[in-house]
Every structure is written in C-alpha cells, then in structure tokens.
Length: 113
Length: 112
Image (cartoon, rainbow over all chains, first blue to last red):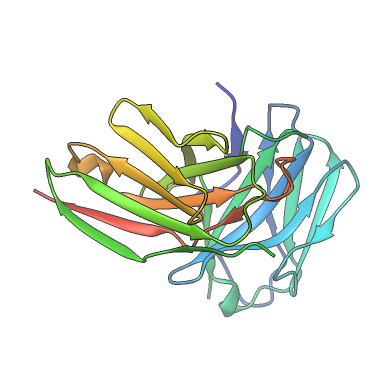
C-alpha cells in the first residue's frame, strides 16, 4: 500500500521555537507539497518541490522554509514558531504525470503556545 | 488562474442521497477529482472522472460532469453516518499532476 507518512500526528511547541515537520513517501514520486488547513480557509499551499533540492513558494510561504535533500523526504521548517502558525499541516506527493492526483499524509496538528 | 467553488455545508438524513456540487472556471483539466477527509485525518482520493466522460459510477458514488456549465457533482447513494466528512473537488489545469487546484471543501453531515 503506497504511503505518505508524516512523522507526528500532534505537536505542541512554544513560541519562538524552530519546528521541523517531516514527510516521507515510498512511491518514488517526483512532486511533494506542504499545505496548511484552517477552518473556513480550505487548503493553502505553503511550498512545493518538483525534484530533489528544488523548491518553489506556494501561496503563503512567509514564516516557513523547506528542505528536500532526498527524493522521498520533504521537510517543512518553521524558523520561529508563532501562535498564528497553529494549524493542521498536510503533506502530499504526486508522480510526474497527470491522472493520479495527490496522495496525502495523515496530517500533523501543530499547536504553538 | 483556476477558481473552484463549493458550498460549505450539506446536511442529509441517513439513507437519503447526497449531492455535493463544484463549479470551476478553467475547462482545461483532463482529470477532475473528488477527495474525502474524515475528522482529524488527511485527504483520501475517492474517485475521479476523465474530462471526455459525462458520468462515472463506482458503487454508491456517481460523478457527473457538465462541461458546458463547468459543473462537477458527486452523488452518494444511501448515505451512511460513516460518510460524514469534508469533500473536496480538485482540478488539474496543467494536466501534469503537479499543481492541483482544490475547492474549499463541503462538510457533509449525516443525521441518523
């Protein structure tokens, strides 16, 4: 069964901490994505990557960075966590062709206190 | 860019049919998708329809595509309480699987 695995389901961090959210896929997918999901705002794209060591800003990149050193792993980094980054974070991956959609991880619910 | 709209909320009684609607502006997508998100979980792909089809049926799910009106719908027959979730439609304007555009999601509540 193909999978996208997010390292934590729930995370509580303090304001100002550096936070790492990890995502690993086992499908050899080219593309990986990070979204955040907030009530009433739907899915908002933070960053995406089409290849190793490649990254592109999404719609709301401010306060975030990413790393893709290996094809299977895409990390989201909150450089200095703030309370307005409390959210559900979703990782997804897709192959480099149409017709397959995205495969999502289970999500990480991050609370910044 | 592509704009994808869904109504926010739908409530039905168990055993009834549910119809979740999605309208879009860009008609270039070859594939149109429906995702389901259960509480506290990620999104899972439910079904998709190829743009040269008008209808696709998969057990209790029926997808209808009206390209002229740029309207996509998901019908769930005999809706069960386990169908309570948020449903997202998604389009792929680049047809490369690398930049889906999602609707805002419709929360389906099924009452016993």
